[in-house]
Image (tube, rainbow, N blue to C red; front, side, top):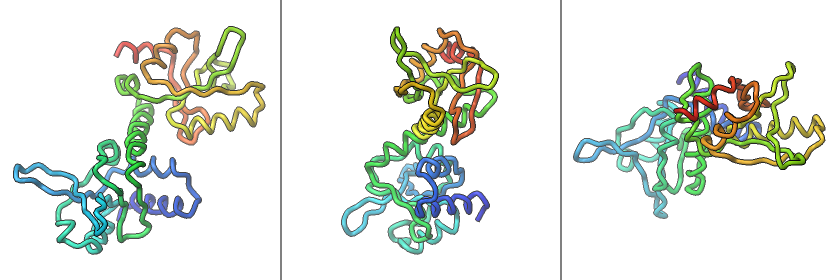
Length: 250
């Protein structure tokens, strides 16, 4: 078992113990690049994810963090149901491609710590995959501009002013005007906690906004930069205002 897989197992256990937040676990699950996923292969040679029905008719999809977890799941479920084929998948692709066909997503079945996701949670898992993809591209020297433009849900904080609402800026010790933009609800909440602790004197109004609308607005503002996730828990990413123009030209 690799150190990464061991760390992921530890994160699952910490989440089950209430010591780690769900969003932090999801980021690790999705960032994991060595998932073992049972598959079937049809007569035409095309592989498909395997779904196994239990006695109640529920369809399970098994995801395994590592080879020992796969072997334990295989032993627990049996070759008659699971077969003997699996594929290795990147979490960013696996979670983005989850199907609603499963009633339960079972992670590390038979190889504790196990964790399960219900069918109604699957759309959220797919959304988190897109969030992690955006956070990953923001961490690169040349972000995928089309991905940023197509992202469905950035978050911003507004404050009421005489003429309507104004975008809240990220705190900056150099006094720069940095638009505060957030990729997920937990990064937004971290900022709201900071602002309330700082007693900035306004009641924040939060908005979810598609990437195309966000960057279209930002390119018209007199800004010194754009700060993504300025309060954590993921690392802050800072860009010049030209990013907004580049995104809109992509």
